[in-house]
Length: 131
Image (cartoon, rainbow, N blue to C red; front, side, top):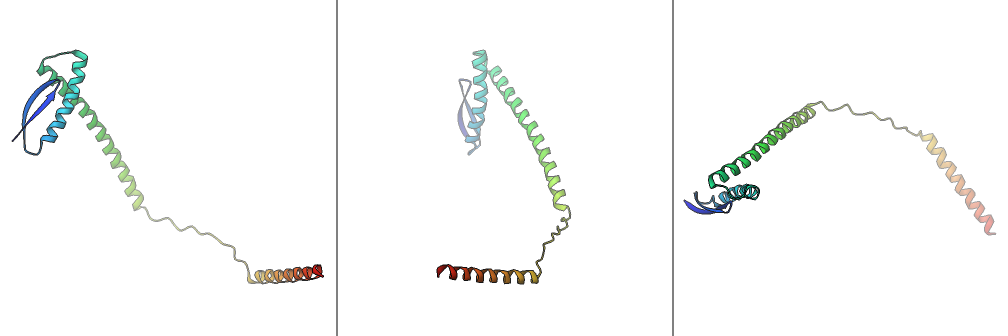
């Protein structure tokens, strides 16, 4: 077992933990110390047992709030997953039919003939203008 020195509320404690868990213990001690610092700044010096009890209760209150929010979010996620599954299980919508106008070949032929005539006229005008 590893021995770890932690600081909570201006006091030092020696705590034993499993090898490799020192970081987690230090992190938890830091959270508890933050709450203890709030208490000591508001109340002043208080007995060690009372400080640890109140700091622990403050952390428990925060944890309860986080757990409530987690339950709300999990319920919301479950609802969204059900909606997603319902949408995925719906049959595919019918393809939308779009009608596209088809230009008859007679019209395109006539337009091509008109274009050729216009080009011939333009060439004739250019020829007469250059003389």
